[in-house]
Image (cartoon, rainbow, N blue to C red; front, side, top):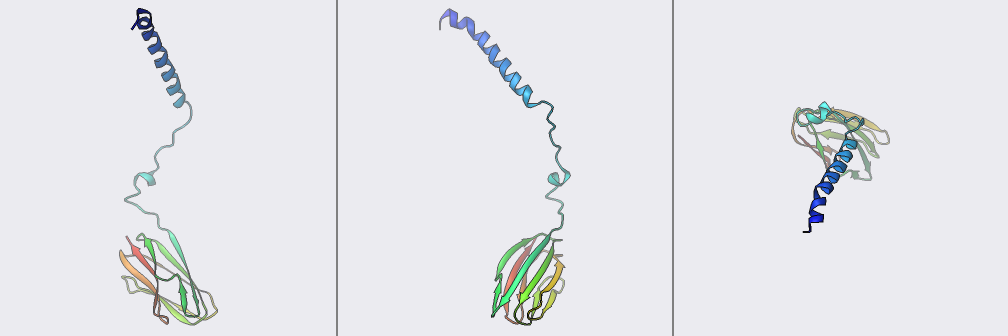
Length: 138
């Protein structure tokens, strides 16, 4: 290295350092930084209950959805809306005895229940003997 180049290194180093400090100072200007929300920090220990809508259609012996799996968190409300071309009984097997909705052909039927226990449960059509949804409550 030449003596001339060696004498400039401290000056170049100081200039680069000053430039970096100026750029970093701009990053910490007056723009407020949002504080961590309590729900984000405690998300694993708390849960805000959700309303989960399940639209069920029964036509000519076919049901939709059919065997669909749904992850549910304990405390969620499950709302059923059933449109059927035949009379039926839709039953949700739950740990507390279940929930039943009577369905009349051509009339929209609605019902809701809360997922109060953990485990794997089914919503089924009694007349068709078909599983509509399997919900896994955690």
